[in-house]
Image: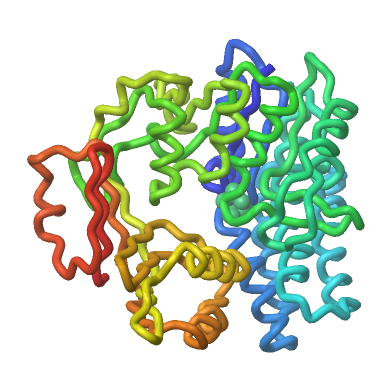
Length: 417
Ligand code: ASP
Ligand code: MG
């Protein structure tokens, strides 16, 4: 049993959906579960709808209408018969979203967000499922909200593995093809939850884990995993094979090809992860496997932007001790900060983190109550794994280094952007 995941770029328009069909037809063996993201930049557009809802309610409907029109254009290209049931299905997702916004009483941004953005995935997967059924690939559409159960931390939900496993066992049978959504799940009250932006890779890994897949393949608009962002480093190389360890570090420190949470469930069951190009589906891409150390010698360059670097010291010149570490870590966690690098000395602790939920001001206020604080906004974190001595020129041209760490496996520095 195999799981495939297709991202937004692979279904960005009608042409791309036709290519999707071809990629599936080219495979010697059919996948069992196909996880699909929202089409193109739909999630961003729906995010804008939610933002608008909290700022300027009058404009919400027209923004939502634009997203609906984008899907309608694709429908017209893919389904000639305007009586095809898909037209009604897509209409009802958007009408449902509109009705929700009309009747919603909650001021919780994250809750409203999760009830709206998932429409992108529901629409894309319905289109794909019908299109494949019409073109010889028989499949069943599954609503991931009925399978993936989570807590109610909206926009960053955590999986309830037991319930999810039971639901998937019940819903999925051998030998059939299922099309379902990435990114979304539901809480115990059946409200929609999301797993974090770009979370569809993680959804694919959850399905892979629960069905004991023999492999998970993520189809991308890049040839596989490269050792650097080709926009920054023109000699970026494809990595043919890498270990889970190497891949998890890459995802954590900034390579955007794989969502950081994806590797953990796969690692637990040693399920290989393939990253392949949907434009060149016969190319091998990258294979992520257990204990394949060959790629661990490849030097990889990652950059994380929009980080904040804070340095804390005590108000009375006393040591920063383990007790304070616990309190500081607790605060960082409660505001959902993503910490990527820390360094301590006798009287100071420096932390480099990003702030996906915009809680930084509240965090800083809490910290100021007990610590002296220096803050550097909008810094960059560079990570070089398996560092060599002869770095490419873009590394030596970096200036404004604020913090540095060097181990045998990893060179990292934080710089002014
Ligand atoms: N559509 C969601 C996003 O763009 C989830 C995903 O694509 O992985 O973040
Ligand atoms: Mg996406």
